[in-house]
Image (cartoon, rainbow, N blue to C red; front, side, top):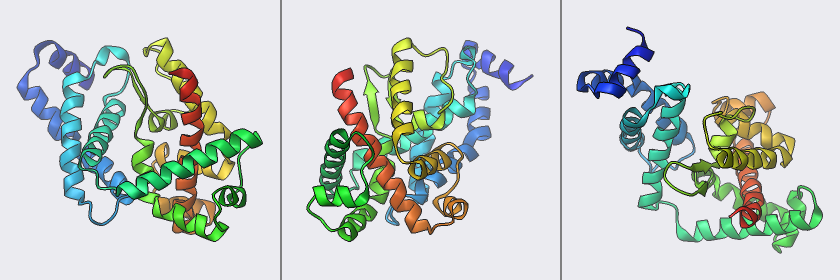
Length: 254
């Protein structure tokens, strides 16, 4: 029996034996996703905890997967697993409120400045708008590295449980959209992809390499011939820039 046939049978019968087989088969996928998430987290976040959170996402994916939609289960499951991990991290609120607030302030400043300039703002320009030195601005950005990975997984648009669109979902598929999703959801993703294409090339490349090509920050540093800490800094700046653009757009869409 092929895997597609097993999925069709499971959808019809909800056979617990088939479900258990799928859980065992895709358990390594949970560890893989947890490992990717762990790279950007502080040391206080335990890998085993991330795996535990991700297991809930795998179970949810198995129970809700529809093989008739033409999407591979692995692709569907990765989104559910990662979503479950970030939902739990968000619920325990491990990021200090002061850090979140400062990041939002910078995002708003970047959004206002770039709207005024009609282009991407330089570090020097952003720092000046915040009444900071460029060095202090870059130090502040580095403090947001783990927060930025979490924030990219926030739902950017949602009407209901089945109509969620996060920024990271759009980075994962920059060149294609699932034809089965509703037209409105396609439009939201198109808008996000457009905004991704407007950020500076190096920052855009880091987002695609990290979220779409599955490279670690260290590997990206080797590709771009920069240090891992510089990649982390650029990654955070890209996300703040992107979120500031989307915040402005959302006001018009919602």
